[in-house]
Image (cartoon, rainbow over all chains, first blue to last red; front, side, top):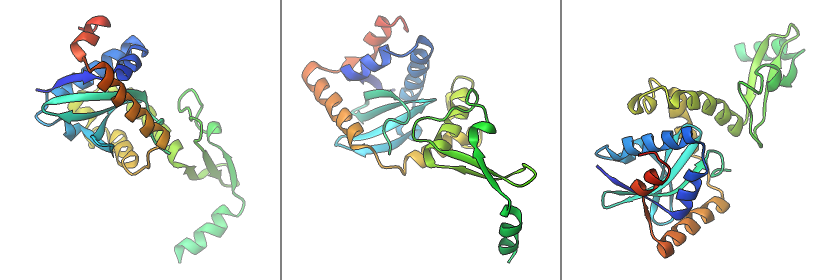
Length: 84
Length: 130
């Protein structure tokens, strides 16, 4: 099981979402954190470094990296903001 | 050879119409930068559906969004049960990232270095999600 931590920006972004979406994000993050390897549910995003991945959560994306059994969530944003 | 015969006869009197005329915005909304249209023949029957990448992602995301709360996490990530989600992942993983977006990730990391990382348990308590 993985621990989860947020950047202050990620926290602000999560707090700004509607309650139903907050609950959805919480459930998906917790479910993924219970996996032996949460990266099996993720896709690679970029290597800043750190090597950043993202979870798809409906229309939302959670960008994160993993270090020593901790999921570090960088941002929670609506889809479509990252790509061009 | 079949292709040569098909295109001129079928598309000779073809007309391009807006995607919104086929699928109402309420059901399949398109975001900024998304372009989609439908080629119809002289009888009004759709012959070709044309989407740019963003429009296709909009379409797939509408389907994926509706499944997010209905499926278990395992089902949601299964390409057999949620092929829309799988295709979104396949497409997005091949798309270049906006430099502006990368800046926001770096800035988020820098802020966390200065102010510290926030345990999710604390956020859950603050938001009454626990």
